[in-house]
Length: 451
Ligand code: TRP
Image (cartoon, rainbow, N blue to C red; front, side, top):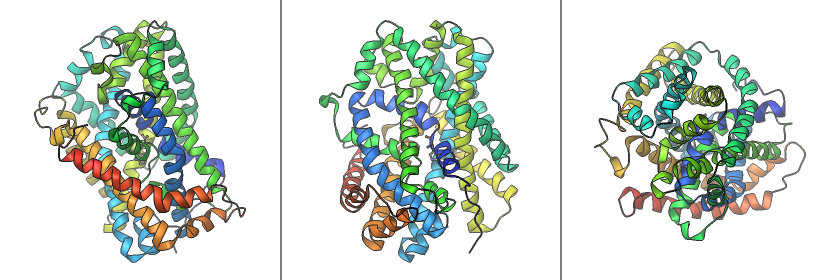
């Protein structure tokens, strides 16, 4: 048995897991998906999935980790030899996400520098964002810089320092988001956006909404990629698993909700809630927020602060992504830490470059009819993660039996309040759902309908 250090307190565990969960997924990805997939409809579907599906899957993953004391690859193998492939499949997800995550991380640094050097007005211009991402070299430079920051921190093993800084920054980021959202809501036209964001409209509902919400749930809560198994392996038996899961979920969802409240009404107020604006995709936050800051008293300073905070949130996530990849490769190959870090950096640079160029000189390359970045995002969130989640459900629901997870949850105080929901979710609802979701992903990929 390998020795594992444990989180000393439940709060420590929740904060660490939430630190990995809260990142660009909440601030950058959630708002643009909500804008695209019908606002309130998307929000409602997301919330329902979070408390049922997300809860069940996160509980299962953390319990598997704590029970086995192993990280994903080994944990699944130990529980059932035939499920070893699941660990490998789960490990592929961070490898796909990390490079394009860093492309967006680079955009965040660019905007920070733009604001810090007083170019707020320019950044609020209509073509500023598109001119930036479509230029061949500049975004690559920021992307490389973001990877360099991440790699240096992972290489020198100074994560702790960064995590401590970001623990302090996370609440400030939340506060800042509230301030920016509150300001945005005072601008003419914002209320229309609030209604769009909060009021479900069944006309907007489709299989695509569920697919997008489900992918977002996995992404945002770092599910279906082995991360939570690893976190669970560090969790002490006397920390209450069920309430930890609830707290991580609430925190993660609250940050995403606030980010949506900050971005979507601002789209209506500053650009107009046209279909084209709502469908902006990955660029939405970068096109909208500069307009808010530009019209806001002290917008330059607030914007600078905001992008610094987002940078730190992104950095803690990218560190954890890279660390995961490095340890997977090291476990498999026995390579040294420094060598593995260098290899991972080079691979990430190579894999991320097409994602960046796909918005400019390579925009004619459109796999599955999407930009290259969107295609990577689609493969990990809409294909691989549902597959991993499906087999996790099969393993827990039918091979091991939900009782194995339930017993692990009960280790602390003999209670598992949501055991019934958990059992029904993991055995029946989630797997059936996942099959449907996968079918719709495949249909999308084959061009039967386009996202
Ligand atoms: N959940 C993170 C976010 O919302 C992104 C992420 C996905 C992640 N997978 C991860 C972070 C693995 C750390 C580790 O931005």
